[in-house]
Structure formats: C-alpha cells, structure tokens
Image (cartoon, rainbow, N blue to C red; front, side, top):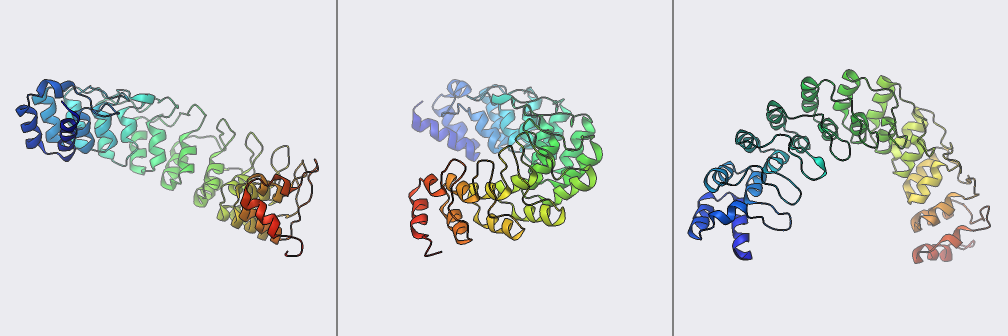
Length: 369
C-alpha cells in the first residue's frame, strides 16, 4: 500500500465514510493489510481513528468484518478504548468494552481509559467505564489518579460520582505530594472545592513537596473566591511560607495577580513589605524581576517601599535589570528610584544586557527624569 492510498484510507475513516472505505479495501484486496496496518508517526490503526472520531459503524466494521484486534495499540500504547474515552464517545466505549477491550489498559505514562475520560466533562462515559470495573485509584507515572484529573476539570457531578463509588479515592497525592485539593484550587474549580471541603478530610494548609498550600495555589492564580473559601472553611493561613520562604504575597507578585495582592494587603492586612527567603526579597523585588510593570505600581499604591533592598543590597531596579525588562526599568526610574550600587558595588545599569534595557538608561539621564 503506497502513501497516497494510506492517506485515503485514513481520510475515509476519519470522515466516517463506511461504504467508500469498504469498497476501497475490498477492491484492492487490502483486508489482511488493514487488519494489522499502522499509519503515520503515531502508529495509529484505522480502529484508532474510527474510535477517536466516534464513528461506531466504522468501529464495528473494522472489528467484525476486517478483524482488527480491539486491544491493538499505537506508538504510545494507546488502545482504541483510550481514544473513544478521551473524546467522550460513549457508544464506542460501550461497544469496545463489550467486544473485550481491557478496561484498565495502560498507555504511555500509565494513563488508563478512565483517566482519559476524566479529562472531559462526560459523566456517562465515566459511569460506563466504572460499571465495567475501571479502577479510579490507579496512578499514572506522575502519581495522579482519575480523581486528581477530574478535580482539574471541575465537574461537580463527576466528583460526586467518583466519591460515591470509591469514597476513599480522595486520599491520594501525586509524586510531588500534590492533593486533589491543590489541583482544584489551582484551576479555580470552586464547586469542586466546596465538595472536597465538605466531604473529604484534608488537613488545613497541606503542602506539596515545594511547601505550596492550596491557598497559595488559589492566590497565585487569581482565584480570590477560592482563597476566601479556604480561609472560611479550612482555616488556611494567608502568610504561610513555602520551602524557599515565599508567602502568598510574593507568589501573587511573581504571577502579576493584582487583585490577589489587593485582597491580601487590604482585606487580610498582610504586610506589603514582608520579605521572603534568606535574602530578604519583597513583593516589589519579585514583580520587578518578572517585568510586571502594572503590578509594580499596584504594590506601590498598597504601600510598597520603593527603596527596599534585599540582603545583597539590591533594589527593585537591580531585579528589573536581572530580568532584562526595559518597561519595568523605565517605570522604576521615572518613579524616582536611582541607580545605586548594591553590596558588591554593582549598579543596576551594569546588569543590563539586552539592547533595549541599555537604551533605557541612555535615555533616562538625571536631566530627563
């Protein structure tokens, strides 16, 4: 079979043109070839394509008439069941299971069809897999189980059903010690968070391997309502520090979450000039290093100290130059921050490497500021 013929078969399968597909296979005598043929770099079979696109009649034809094995796998060890589950094609999922597909088969990185199904908000597919004894507690190579994945997607009906069929499924953590509560907080899944806080016995401020709490995940991703929920229902600490000493304040500055910064400082009375780590970096240092010019202004409006220095004597201007952010350098200079030396005698200008950052200093002479 040449490349042109292969592409034509794949196209007909993807489009669900069963009659044309059958006619071409039989007229060319390709039944035996198609039964075992893999196409493209992914190594998919026609059954993979049919399952992925939800063409049940083509799936049935390939299994019954051509004799393709329902457990055939591609280069990533994906079975047709993985494809059907990941694309929420319930009829194809049901058919493949009836024809003997293994419900907990593993693809590359140890993902099961149930894990793939949980990347979508289709309770019917998930129920179908569970009714065939899919195991929601299995972990992939990163230590995530199906419940983790469902918490990321945020469908409360899926979460409730998984807890119904496997009440202890929430007692899990990834290889980096992240819990489903971390996952839901990070992705802003408020309804799921409410279910987890009501029905699961997570310890307040549980930390991952980097010392990150669910509250930190919520704040640094701008999910203020979830942060409030964790404060009210879970006694979260708004000033807890991770393994390198950064608090939610500093993490929100890194990600440029200005509403979160206002929430922390104005509502929770967190000190805007609180330092993090052994080298005493402030939120203003972090925002400047990331080049978040608007966040720099927000921090100053909240009472941030423009002239604060870390343990090495560096100002926010030094950090903006380390990050090579011309706009942040321009803003800090125009706000009145002078280019002074740090503890080692290095000026911010000496740290400027990118041409646009160097030009800022050339344009911003003392006479122009």
